[in-house]
Amino acid sequence: MLRLTAGRVRTLLSRQAMAALSTSSARMASHGHEVSEQADISLPYFDRLDTPLPDRPYQDSLSAAEKSLKQKEKGPWTSLSNEEKLALYRIMFKETYAEMKRPTGEWKTVVAGILFFMGATGLVVLWQRYYVYPPHPPSFDEEWQAKQVKRMLDMRINPVEGFSSKWDYEKGQWK
Image (cartoon, rainbow, N blue to C red; front, side, top):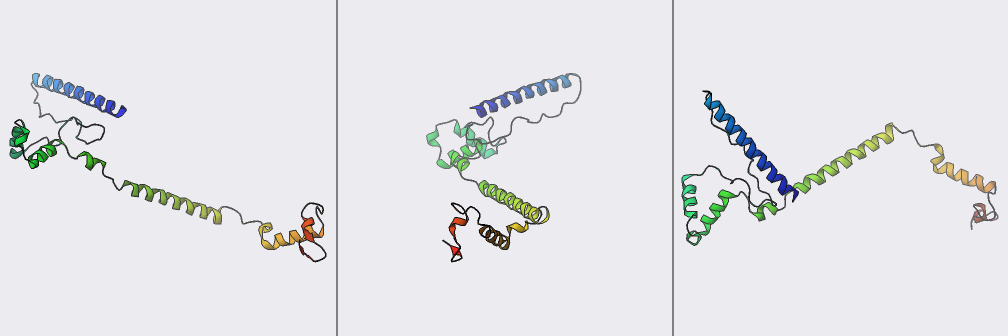
């Protein structure tokens, strides 16, 4: 509903601008200045689902055949053929509702953009891993951790319920 209202406000503003320009043109002509032909600055034509009747027709300038068809339009529509009705529709509107609702390929662009930025982010993270962050400390190595476990078992750390309670000291293996 808000888009409909905004569209109507733009139409009203463009009409006021046209009125202001036409009065200034008349003012210029009354002072003896040459007045150039006025350009059409009304809103451009667009098809929208929420605005079924645009402010202006799709084709402003009509050929002789289209003008005769417009005259024939004023008569009974039963005398018009389907091709003539379609031609009249195409004079007023660029697309039908079915043509406006058909899917576009925009989703492909969105997915490609997302994948591009994810890849760029991955490259930044990889670059930071090699060039920004320091190397891992030696305590992360498998050898170091194995030595640490052996040291804890030799010291018999928490022999009742903890780490050393799960080691069989006689057989030299985990229980």
